[in-house]
Length: 430
Ligand code: LLP
Image 1 (cartoon, rainbow, N blue to C red):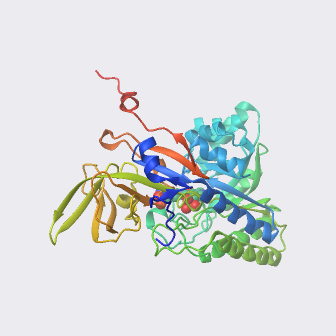
Image 2: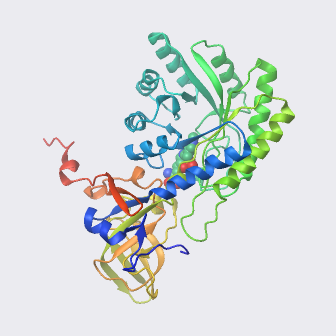
């Protein structure tokens, strides 16, 4: 990588903190965030909206990394957040995220989760399907109250990404289909319901998207939809939410557009289409998750055993693996590895970095170009800040790692390491 930060000792640093000190203080595997990287990404998104001079909201998609400290951080930066479960909602509220800045997503929000959202009077529920409207209506009636909603539609756009994480196409499980008229029917039902205040529309075309093109197409579709709804129902959207999906860089060959370029191109198209359609200018919302968290996080592992079969395989094992990062196994995601104690040493070997889990698919980095490694070395895997900890498991009864925030040469433990006692906590025996 072209931007490896090191100190006088020649060790890799994160947020100005020596990675070897981090491992000796907190143990490994350890997920260490450079807080300044999160803040800088947030500011890039915000500044682009400010420069474009449009009303906006940046809502952090907290499934990328849901930690109380993260909600505290993003709330402090003025962001809202998107939650997709009762658990994320509880964590967001615990992190002091103002309820009015929380939006709730999901294709099968449970009645009990909808009730939590109504009781907390969150900013809006992004309504996904007819069953949800019925559940929500029942809850609002029982409690004799109201809530703001946004209509999620599937705009029929195929984002160029992995099929498991592309969501905007017509056969997606998410949102009301536009072409069959479901979206229109849903809107009618919602605006006719005095307990639901319809703020606008939402779409999300996919994740790990590198270019603005798909978003620009989504803008066209969404604005023409708003025009139809305006003509047919006199509906005027207060907000247009274009979802998340802005790409992050995992390996050097990944070259996603910078945050400000995405926003600039999206806004240019919104301005053009809204004025052509002669509509009132809505607040523009985006929901970045990965692009705020991924590159800020690095996982630190300790090197253990090794297996070499000349001409066949070279495996270097570390003390974590698919339990803390399922993405290589699930999406064939690519990562790089850095020898944290000697990042600039001559890279003399190509090895496969594997974890300690009992599966051959437990691979973290295929074909990692590294200096010769020894047991006890610290190996860093960068760009693990999104969908790493949140998708972690206790497979093989391995405890989940600790997480630290690092900034200005200081570290703070924000999620403690699980203990064996934690792991046995739910286990009742015979
Ligand atoms: N908004 C909605 C409605 C979403 O469904 C998602 C992600 C986001 C925003 C945030 O997308 P982001 O900006 O993070 O790309 N586990 C997968 C990613 C799943 C994304 C699901 N939805 C992975 O590790 O790549």
